[in-house]
Length: 183
Image (cartoon, rainbow, N blue to C red; front, side, top):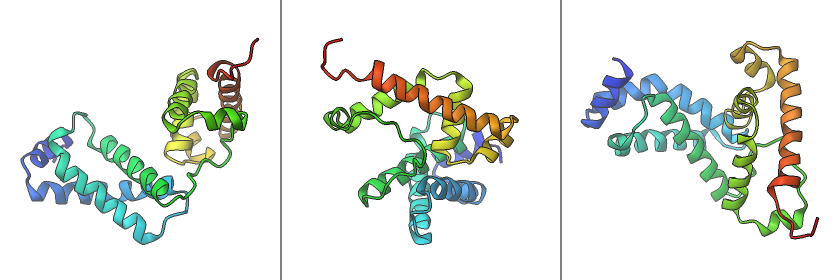
């Protein structure tokens, strides 16, 4: 069954369509949750989150406006995982993405402002670097996986990540955050 037909059947609340979606995408959803969880989730947590993703698919299938069911499931899986990590006060897997913005400035911004600021900074990167960042920090792929997927050397991936982190740091500390001091 094609993805468009599958989505139509889900909208019609056909239980066989849900079974097909689970069969087709459960490994993908599991991998997204596990990757985004950064090793901090138990097997049971991953299973529960996977079930939540497919429950959301069943309940919200009539609201899905994308052409790719897989990308919708991936986004829901990532969001549910982040929500779970926040709820349980677990650290998000950002490993080497540490941007040293002065603590007092960072604390004055609420979470929505920080998120908007980081998104704005990432939007300043060139499209290839944005894809590398997406693959590294949203999909939790390592340099070798990114290199394989994008058909570029892994050394290039590592150097672009390093250069991109520096660009983000520069944007956040110079152009993105107004610390209230006179220039």
